[in-house]
View 1: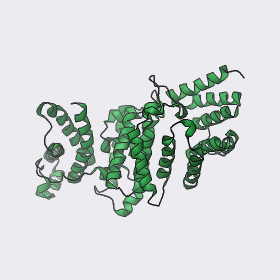
View 2: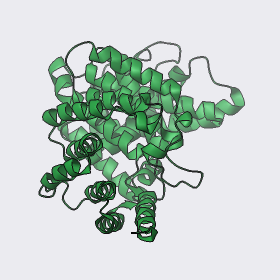
View 3: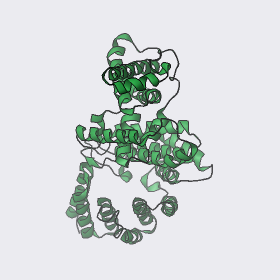
View 4: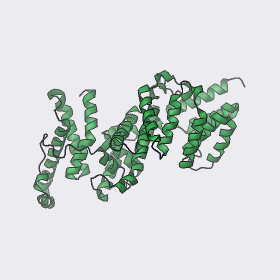
Length: 415
């Protein structure tokens, strides 16, 4: 299967899974059937060609597997035979690929909302979203979070059991339910993107597969809910941030900070799309946290050089965001912006409040920012100590190497 074929299967996987769950209602069995259909496609299509209706083909094969599964179970278990006989006749056979039955509806959004059901923890929701809606294998998801495949399989299995036991119907949530769950959907997509953009652990600074998947799924949500400002804001934020991907590391994978990046490497098409998205949504009135973060990212991306960055505007936007969100990372970034506008003492003063915030106290990012501001202020010895402290705490190898290098260069510089 070539790359185009693989991408096609990945794009169709959640749609097919949604259609099969809608028809048969069993999440686990449906997923197994869809995996079998995808495997069959991967083996047959390269030799026989992609069918005219690949989605219908996959649904037909998966539904046939489901029917086989149900019939096998019927043969072994009398109770399920009774259940099967009570089902409508048209639900006991698989539809033809060209029948159009239950094949014209894209259920990706329903899957996303199901995977982000309040009954699930956020880690379980992320794993299930990547598996069911993202089309990633259990091994790929395990690699993404650096846990063994067996561990991730157990996590996903528990999540599916939780969904099953909660009795969640496979349908688009009501307006009230959608409003309740939309923030969870967006948060899960945001977390997936962040892990892809700045991997929290391991040898690579970035996981482009995760970032791309988050963008693709967020784009799907935006296509289906184009009037939701925060959906557009999140998509814009991802595009504007991911646009810098090529400039964030050197050929050896070492981290390059924002102010030292070669901005000619930034993806101008992604920046244009992101700015167009955020400009359109900001003009509609109500503004949320993702829209504000996208606006901040846009200010950075619009600066031709690091020294051209409009830090007063960024500080004002972080001020709004800080009032809207009780997030210590926002407060941390607000302190950086304050330092860039009013000088490092102003930023260092704001950091003091975070020392007693249990969510961030002792976090390596707090040490790293403090080291940077101390370096700006000329306090060399204190900066070295905090760079080294941050390096000891981070689990990201590129970040550790970067922080150690900063400390070493400062230590070697004339006092």
